[in-house]
Length: 302
Image (cartoon, rainbow, N blue to C red; front, side):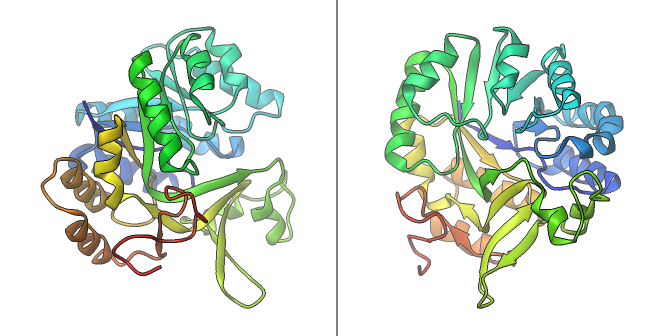
């Protein structure tokens, strides 16, 4: 069974904006699974945790399956404790985004997130043998590798997920460039990342859009869109298709990709509907084609 999913919010949105966003997702978005949790900066967690029960209840009442996503970087004792607490949670699956979580999960069934470097079927087989039931692949993998991983996943009986919309995560760092850009330190950032709810744009010295900064995370400037590659992924056996929340109408985006998965529209119509949403960044699918990630191949010009 193929499923459309919604990844965790990676940006620092205000609590009321998160609550409103998830309420609308619960009621209107045709997604089967929603990943919930802070995956970028542990300092942001107190802004989200108080709303967990309400958000989870609302999503599940709307028929969504909720999976808890863990931090991508675990350095401090506080972060180790947070990771251990998530991994011990009863009643919900956990998506592990850092190898430290493999110790805490203790062999219990869990998912592997896209911020883990799972690049080949041997690694997939090893982790599946230790409780992993689902793998969300890194966004930079080309089609040939995704095909091999999907085939391995079918043989192992695990889910294989690919991000089909949203900015590509390129790196995470121990340092916070977002704070540094505003003359602050990581420990005294004053949550300046809240000023950039879709990430802070980074330009070259000649003024060309280049990358996007989200706290300790470096993202692509462009939005990955694998709309035209849906049929290829379905043929490979990819089971789950992830949308990453951006500062756009995500319900409309979900409806477009749900129609693509259901073969109700073709790639050209989906492109037209996506274009009508006035995205704040261009699309790209270069990684899928084994090229520079920022490039776009297909019906739209490169």
